Image (cartoon, rainbow, N blue to C red; front, top):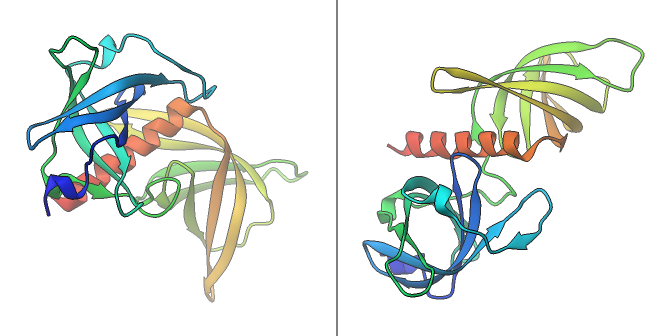
Amino acid sequence: MKLQNYIFANQYLDVQDDEGNMFVGRVDTFDEQVITLANITRLDRMTSAEERIPLSKMLNKEAYAVFVGNDKMKYQFRTVVTRADTEQFQIHLQSPEVDDIIKIQNRDYLRISSSLRCDLNAVETEEQLQLQIYTHDISGGGLSFYSRQPIQNNKYVGTLYLYKGNNELLLPFKADLVYMNQVDDDRYKIALKYSDIKEQHRNHIIRYALQEQVRFRR
């Protein structure tokens, strides 16, 4: 496989750095070393409003690029953002090795198996139900876990504990029950979908999933 099997002219790439800064750019030219993006637009995910603004905070930093290929599947790769030396404002992305391009599962968010501590509290119930669980898998859209006991509530507030280097990040969220399936005589698999989570916290989960996916492939 060659880079041309994934990247093509006039394709749009979503680029996001580790601080949550984002922009969208259209592929102008590309080769095995550099992908040149034009028509750069900063995207505010909280309001869906778009405006052209300087992107100096993202220059000379690593970032993730996400795109849809010719096969209509979603992919991502790790890259470095620099400014192109052209008359028009354009951005350079370091071209990835083909083996470093990762297909995102056919979901809204990449989901990975990962055991992370999570505190859950049921809401809209007279009982004060508190659970401390360890996730079976997580994504930017929700999480699943196994439980020895069935749960009775449909809505929860929780805190996910995510490590970034030596720092522990506390990511609060609200979630709705998606399903509860009994997998054997004394165990249930339970899935929750975030109903309210800060985009900054969702981005931490997304980046963690992407980084873990890259690590697993090495």
